[in-house]
Length: 433
Image 1 (cartoon, rainbow, N blue to C red):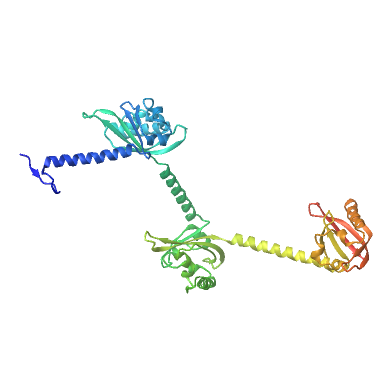
Image 2 (cartoon, rainbow, N blue to C red):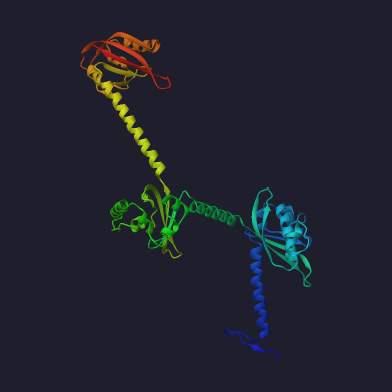
């Protein structure tokens, strides 16, 4: 006699326990079927079903999207091995042959051998698209069996693994870069705890500062190897900038980083032997998953070479200014009215005597045609052309007309001048009354 169970719900008739179990099994199968349909019909999964020999029988929309083939291009024509990297198939066959101690043929057998033996198999494989491009896929292989456990075929479900691969490569590169920086003798990497006590002192820090790691670990803070006057000045400057009192010492070195503000600054480090060098320091707060500060990382580079270059450049700039002042002094101290023009006769420079002679300002003269300031512009223009032809003229008489109309007869001596590469720059002329 079947046992009767009552299912909650108004007006429902009692069901047997067998009926309830059957109902729940059907519900589970429906849910599983819905999940299978969702996966099989998804554009995000390549679902490829084959017969027992490996010839493709089903090629879903996801496979079409990922691989670029239409189902009609592959169904009953090729195996999944034909759209896989052949070198990887050979390598997989060799590896499985060793692992399972049985010879496995490169090709489709290498893709499904484990599944054919009832062993769960998920692996990475490079698929080759119709256009010849490639992408990494993670493939899960299942053997399809009948009621007697005979193999009817295989189902290969794949996902495009490109994004994960790119992320892994990016992480590897980032990790390699971090390791290169951290282990480099060209960067001082100093990590502290949250109170500033040094916990890590890399080879670059040892080389630059002359301390062994054992000299500083768990003993001092980076402030103890920094110029104390600069640390005090930095504390004052930050206190004003951020409108909050900052204590001179380690706090001044990491305050911005502790507030999540990017901080790169110049600081003078003091070596073990007492010598000093300028460093560019980048400070980062080290935080846990809850954003609590665990410590700080100070990465520094020796800035001595750049400082030396800057000092040399400053010296050269000063020498150039001195030379320009000396040259200008020579021009201005000359009793003659001096004028320089470009090859077209436009004034490029004059001295104060020329300003006085013409009654015009320096700005009014520079850039103007020199012939405009003589009573005979044609003769003045001819003088320029003659100098350009003969390289010089002597005692060339012209009459200057000042802005107030006053006329002055002058004798000009002029010559061409060139730059250091002997390229013509213009005419240099001296006028004497």
